[in-house]
Length: 327
Image (cartoon, rainbow, N blue to C red; front, side, top):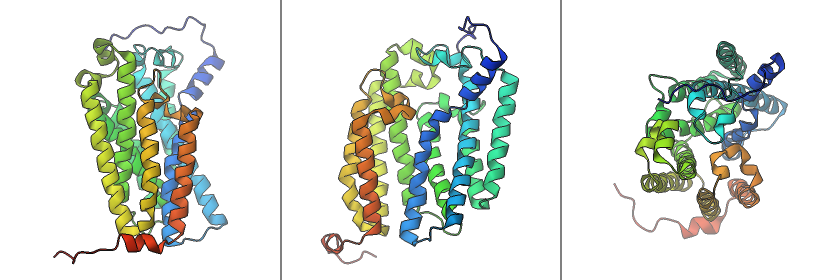
């Protein structure tokens, strides 16, 4: 554990400054990650032909508000507990908590208050939605708080952080229906694609720091990583993700096989971005600035939505079984 260095800010701390700091540690700009909730909304609507009404839009608005509150609660505890380590990072040292601008007791109140507000909103939707919401918050605790603090354990840091992906899908799913469980293959795909993105973030961070001792002091898991084993893990996550996406496609919607090339191109672009200095891969909330990736994301989403809505018989004929069923 690094020494608790003094805050690096030389500016006088005012009440306005403290309030701005406490607003900043909520990381509202990271709300862009709530886009990962949308597939959980779109898939059941299209496959189950659920009606869209005023009540639907109300549930969606409340659901996204609750999800944002829980996510922000997790960011607050992350900011507070990571402050000593962030002071060792070239850019994260400028975060409010690392600069000593945050009242730690007030931050703990903020953390719990946002959790309570999010759970209260969640209860107005359904118990299933609230359980998924509580699970998202609990995973934030496991990831950040000792004695668990899974973010300090190599590979487990990626796997536990990425559990947030299928949890976000569940949140989207239970915003529109609470009577049907989503397919396991879809949830595992979503989990593994999250691992792929998170491992690339770790890879990019590791390359940028460029010093084993400094990176290990900043993030304990980096003591056990190197570029080679990170790239091996990224390959593993990508392979498992596409395996389970294929399982979902073959079982539920064969037309989605047409989305494979678009997803693969998007994943390749993201992989390439991880090699860039100070890559946006390290700050996913800024990915919208990468025009090529955004075009690929939009095209991929449009293709998937179209394939979900239409039935294409010739695809079914091409991939029809040609061998007898195995017992």
